Image (tube, rainbow, N blue to C red; front, top):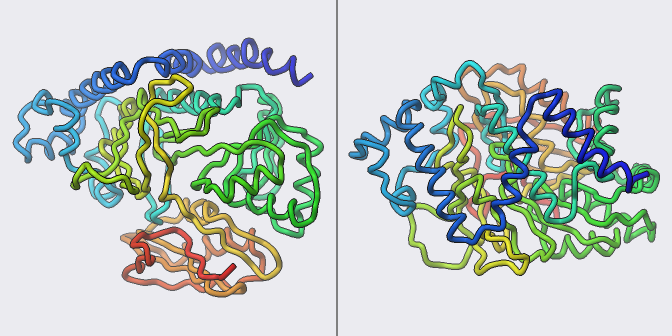
Length: 448
């Protein structure tokens, strides 16, 4: 049945739903992006610059923040930004700047229909941002293209070890995911005492693809290796939310008997880069985003550099030269697959530590982001673990902070750790940097 359902879903059911019922352009964009990926590198560069020039003109006309900022630099027209090298000298956009200029970053013509999300990100600074429905459809198309590089396709039998809502899934959600031929397992409720349940679920569903946060799939791999348990082998495993390191990849492949692929994205843009079948670096979606490595520094050097990202299609709240706090190492040359898209050798900066508890539970760092998503009046936060039975939760309050948010966050964390961990909240004026000079959502100081 699996072999019959996938083409039926991809060619009949999903187009009828997405294009016919919902009136979305996702599939049209997917076809567009699938054509563009095979362009020569210089053609992709030209396409990207053409899109960027159009975006610059739009921002000059409709986004007060950019017009005022650029005018302060002596720019009198968008055409004054002459080429990509000149663009790379414009100021970067960071989270404090967005929060301070939120209304001035919204384009007037798109304000009424704007959609919003909140992100915590790897730096622990809550951020609300806006995006258009059209840009969301493009992001979904880019996601499916990127997953397709590893062989994952629409309608394929897929299991997600993901951040689903805590507790039982609603019937409508189960039906929706069932139509997509996918099964959702809650990564936040998995612990060592329940590993067998999750393994059993994989055996029952028999997925062709598993998509998972890196920390929980590595934890399951370690459990499978330690216990000698064998599970249904999927055709591929896609890691998300954190960098997939070589040692982790090896353990996953040993435990599951399937190749593991690295993907990279963030909430502000969704999928930024992903590995193809050759797994020789991550292809950057350069026909959809402009990704620069480094700013305000020399071009030389082969080590990790800060990512600077521009969404070429979000006309509602354009994020130009946005730094999300992540680091990456550039790749070189063209991949053997023949795609003209540039590559990252690796992503170095998404290192959300997995927190642990004495009774065998573990909390993916990504869950801390989820626990704080609804927290208002919080400028930054971080969870530090120095011992198994206690988390220290640091909060830097912002304007509008209400002490009730502490109980709100506590309630979200208790859903995962129960009463096995003391949750010690502390308000502070600032959060100390890690030894590497970064500020992360979670810091585990446990050994082993």
